[in-house]
Image 1 (cartoon, one colour):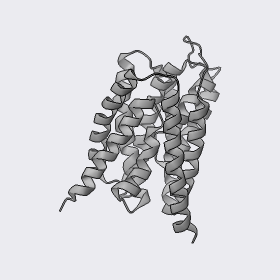
Image 2 (cartoon, rainbow, N blue to C red):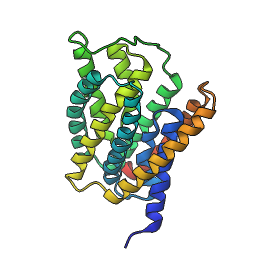
Image 3 (cartoon, rainbow, N blue to C red):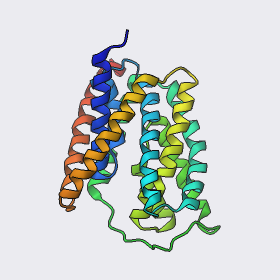
Length: 260
């Protein structure tokens, strides 16, 4: 019998992630795993990671379509970055499945702290609108892609907070292009991780569908609200604070379970 409360919490959690993404433009997907574990009640952290990866990939694909219509995607760069990252994502997700679930959540919380710091620091570089991926910068693009993919696969996240600065550092493209182009890699990384976990039976397909539906609705609402608010960085600061709060709870909870 389907647990209505379980699905409703999944829908609301997906909406919160989507709303966060629409509101601050990135980083929201890192809340997917803790929401699935601590709000929805997914008892197996590995199932939470596999399911979150699938939801993140679907939501990223939706965002990619919007950026493609706005012509902010540099497809060659996105393809190169994603190709290298898929290798990293497969290796990272394979390693992640072998790590104790509670220890994985503890490491995930540490990563969340790093994400919060990166969001507070912000990114002010204007970049070069004509930037392209060539033979000259290909090694850097592929190297950043491989590393980003490994982190994405290990933790079951989109990894946009790593991919965007990675694209900027390796190509010097403007952030608007880096955000749009990053979604090529986020989609590829998420699918790779989700398929790897699915092969081990670690994806809750029903929850994934509900989570994705909530994410689409929440994303539309978040985008609408963001258009009405100022872009002075206060929203990012508030969201980073939320990440620190969730990370603190995860560190306390998972440390007790994993190391006691």
